[in-house]
Image 1 (tube, one colour):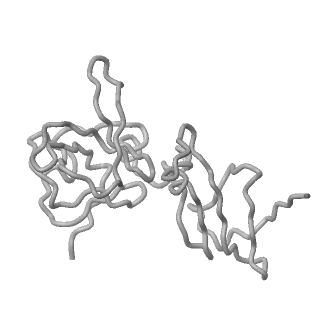
Image 2: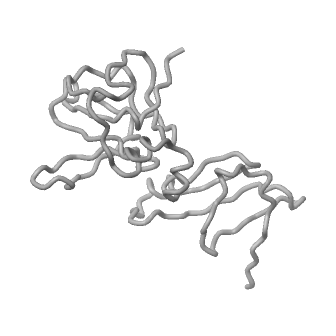
Image 3: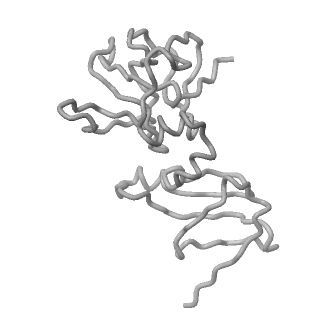
Length: 200
């Protein structure tokens, strides 16, 4: 069966949501008027991602009449640079670390929810924040499964658990086993990776 690739007007899709370099298997299905995309769906997998059902859900892309979700795991460094400040890009996409006692939230006591600066996923509640004395925002528990960790061997003879946003894989910081009850965990997070949304 022959396959066709339709070229759709881009005026209905904002520039930061244009999809580039997708493989030929992506099917563009226009509306009857052939002027607005009613749905674009694909299962694009970031390099190295697993085939678990959780990853498949996170890897889906949808657009409905110009509004929808973005496959953050497939964004290029150039696209991230357009969305983030230099410091935010260095911390979240290049696994950097801000200097202690310099971040915006290290001593903040405002009530609210801390979201991922890259994809706006809620990560930590202010009620789980505590003063660790380290100079970085510290939390004893993330929100649901929105934060994940993996082994970090970047420093020889000092294995650590890196903390990532489960949606966009942004580097957030590290988690240690010296936190307060009830979890005993200390999620040591870079302020530049967070966006606080105060409780109204």
